[in-house]
Length: 341
Ligand code: NAD
Ligand code: UD1
Image (cartoon, rainbow, N blue to C red; front, side):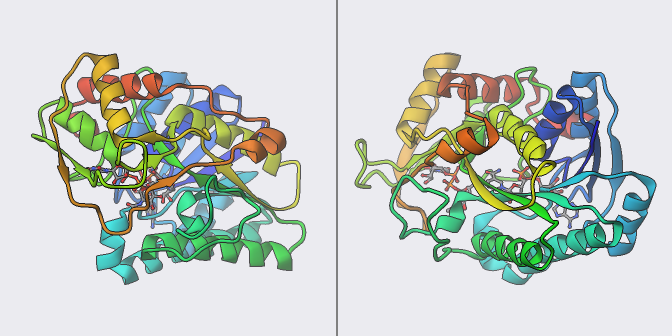
């Protein structure tokens, strides 16, 4: 079976993808510098599957280190998760974001070229559609104007990969545009473990539920949506991880570049998320309405047809599953992976 190298594999999406790849029979190797994660996530992925993952403590920008890893292993495909992802921070520290997110990409591509590795999947984002495209977003739309440096690193990385594939027709690239991944593995052993105050909605809700934060601020209730709060396409992280398995199957068999949305195609509002979380888990979430957050747009969701047609993948889990599994993870791990380090 083929071996997949996960760059940034100890992170939230990488660790869930490792589980699904191992369960599908792939061999998994991972490297991470743990700037936003813990090696414990990879140990837990091994426990869930009963299989082993060779894990390197390495900065993906370091081409010498990468060459060592590619020398030691016969790598068939690469999944590039390694990046910084906090939107607000990216506006404050744009150079840090460009340096990290672009250099990881270039170093990976150079090393792949050096070792003749031809298959790569990239963690892109719905943010590349910008704010002017009509919803639902379809892959045939042009990339838009991003509202922050983080988003631009995703758009630029897509461009770099497209150019690399144009120059080398034997290269095979899948750009996975994630919508809003939430939830955790149903075992509760791995999940999202943000440092400090969470920027994203679901980890904030689970921290309110577990008593670490007092109250959720709902950013704006005067949007042109049914209940006035923003609507997003939330997707269970296990579904998303399974999408990576299908993308791996695909990328190994084809050449060229394909951008593919990974979303459910169904949007939910902030208040609908809070209500579902309370109902499914029997806990109260204190919230108040606050001002809009800069850069937020009222609504976006995926047209999920291409993923179904090209990758034979569709999201299966419900919003209730997402809420239950997010809470199950947080309850079992009030301090994330820190308790086990
Ligand atoms: P994450 O922060 O949990 O995972 C990213 C991993 O990359 C972390 O383990 C981090 O330590 C590692 N990393 C960062 N820079 C590195 C470097 N130079 N060398 C080695 N390792 C490095 O984030 P995630 O939610 O798992 O996201 C994975 C990818 O998907 C990221 O590229 C992110 O931008 C993208 N993405 C995430 C979301 C989301 O909502 N979580 C949405 C769209 C796209
Ligand atoms: C964010 C990023 C996006 C990135 C995506 C996945 C921004 C502006 N966009 O999307 O680029 O691809 O994460 O990582 O950050 N909300 C609250 N209160 C909170 C937190 C969030 O009301 O404390 C609301 C937001 O206004 C939004 C929704 O919840 O309407 C979801 O927010 P979030 O989880 O941060 O994701 P996005 O903003 O959609």
